[in-house]
Image 1 (cartoon, rainbow, N blue to C red):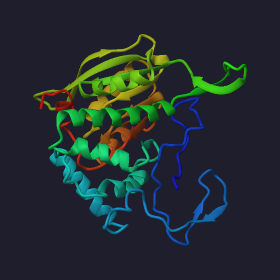
Image 2: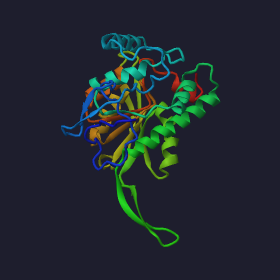
Image 3: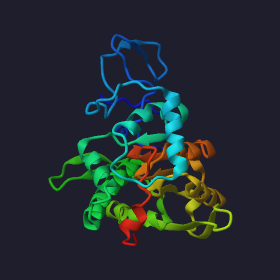
Image 4: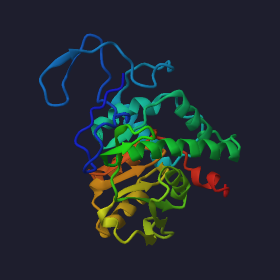
Length: 306
């Protein structure tokens, strides 16, 4: 059973019917334990024995030393490892519980299932052909984009069916746009356009300075009224988080509030997600996996420059 323990919505007017995003709970439920009502009540309920999501296929123990995991994550991040299929199974899934304690509910994960796991595996596999890689990447991007759209505000509406029946439904509120961080973020643009044909998309070009190794903004082009819009910021791989931090600063300079920015990514490291949330506590991050080893080859292989 998936539990959503998220706090207040970061996007004003957010559709409250959407609850498919899995926000990791701080601790796995234990047999015979009692949990408090996170909505503010004092009632409690018995917690049935269960395992954290993703542990069913793992032979490793359900509990680990949090300090040991944190050290391993930081060491891997500092080495800048290249993504592959040799990453320890279940490592990131267990770390999600610790990350929820450190970061909070602004980090949202797609519910893990075998379909998503297979797509992640193909993307990380160094022997995968570029055709298989792109096909799997596009599918995973589409899943993230669809869930990102669920985080945007909707409003109720009434339509008439061909048989004359009045149907009460919902539709998007106006005032949304996408922003891709070039170059790898452009891989997510088509997935967004497939879902929203007329959505406007801005671009930001950020590269590391050769001398200082710091992220530097070279180009930024947005819709003129972006300060009034909800922003879907697209960047598939969050490694250090520095590029995204610079991009958000540019958006803030153009009048965009962090609370209306939803960052869409495919993979994130613990360090990258934590750095972004610490810098901008109101931003929302939506990703499929948090793992100390990110597939940093994504952009090169997707665009055929590897």
